[in-house]
Image (tube, rainbow, N blue to C red):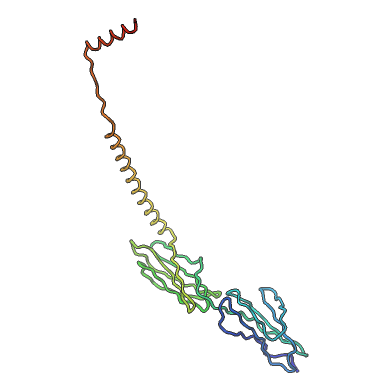
Length: 241
């Protein structure tokens, strides 16, 4: 007469989306029969016992990652525990802001980190890039796709990561970083600055020329000797008067 054997957790429905509800069941083989159940929410270093004491635990899905959960079955002999079970929640792909793209001496390396369940298919759009290879690797529930290649000259440097599963799709345009990209940006900025300076000088010259045209020329009047004398005499007489 042992304690309950083969204690495990089943999930219904198997595929659930965020915002839906699901039910976990604590299964076992027991004789004598199971008298009660206990449910636990498992954290990294501890377990929190839930209030539910029945065979089934009903949950409202409020996030993409729930659990892990563990149950135990009790009979009059003893109790046995299940392994921890993580509730899998289906969701459309999300591209992490940690995704990046670098350009160094013409060599391109881009990483696109995607979270989704089920795993998404990742593709790239990279005009002007001679792609050497793309590699996808799963880690910690995420998918990282890496692109490597050589950047051609005179290209727009627009590299985009695309991710899709049956629930949706998403794209993110990555910004190139690195000394090569910085040099190209500096050259572009210098070119724009030079063009702006030329336009400014041309505007100043144009305004100066227009100002000169609007000023009336000075007219010099040379008085004759007798007229100057008359004027001086009249002025003298006026003053004596």
